[in-house]
Image (cartoon, rainbow, N blue to C red):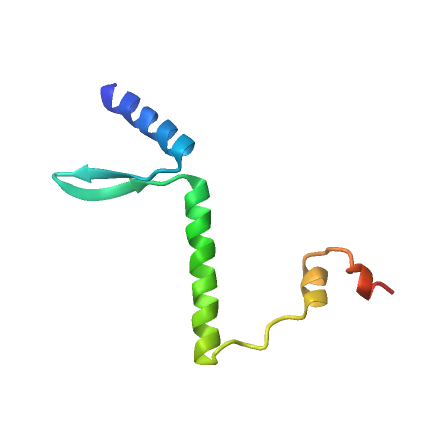
Length: 83
């Protein structure tokens, strides 16, 4: 029961402070507790870094026109492209 209570407190702290916590097993890091906001920020940063790398390498594809993305997502046409 003590471990569950301690883990619950750690989860609350991570969610509140956005600080990550390393969990160890036998003296080695086994896992991290990371807030969802921090994880989203890291994923965004990784996506941007990948885009910049592909751009620098000249390996970016043609991309998808803005209006095609809106159509695929079933969003209304942008005002400057409305018919």
